[in-house]
Image 1 (cartoon, protein in one colour):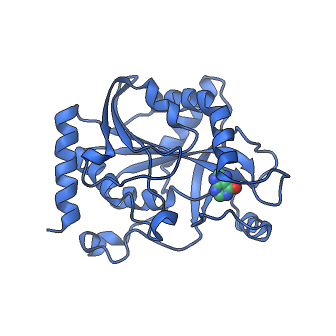
Image 2: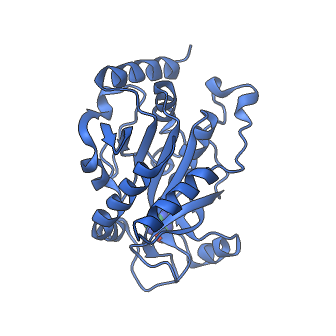
Image 3: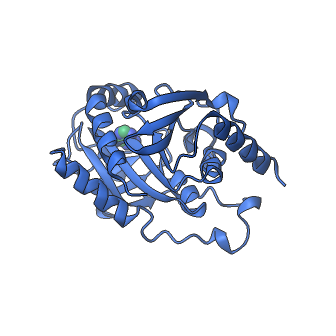
Length: 274
Ligand code: HPA
């Protein structure tokens, strides 16, 4: 057994001892953090107490797990992810995602902040991820001793579950909340894109661009979880607007939309059929 397998077993045991058997996990990216306060009976476990979880260092991405309820669902909320741009490798959330699978989680709801490639999607707009472009063509499964064998050849058709997307769309509509939909392009970062790169991504069919989520979707699909993805648009992408892009700008735009995005996320999670 590898070190990671042991760390996953220890992490899932600790989480099980702290609360229930969640079937739904929510991974909070920039702009979605205030959702954690909506969890009923929230039991907080810092990532530092879970050996399979990463140390997170990016401002706005504090690392902690919250266990509790949203509507009728028992949930586990992961506030904070490690990004591929921190180490150069897209493996930072491998232990955390495998811990979710070991706990019996069946659905992973992913959230992030993203730039918009569509002038009709301004800052503050939420977007359901219909599909993704793995632009760096990096995978967290490469060279993974625990993912050897046929299971590593994961189908990425319907990576973002069509049934969950339909449930999310319907829930937003019932609540009168706007929800766009489109393809998310993953860029390694940490630098923002050039205007030429943004023109390239538009040609490829992307509607939003960001620096996260895709590695976790691959890990989750490999672990047998269904995935739903939501982006909060925080800016028009490079060359499309006149804003100066930077992390402070992303955080400020995310902060401005945070109450609305948390309410939308609660509406959607409550409505999911798991
Ligand atoms: N590009 C990449 N990542 C991002 C952006 C962007 O414009 N906005 C928020 N995250």
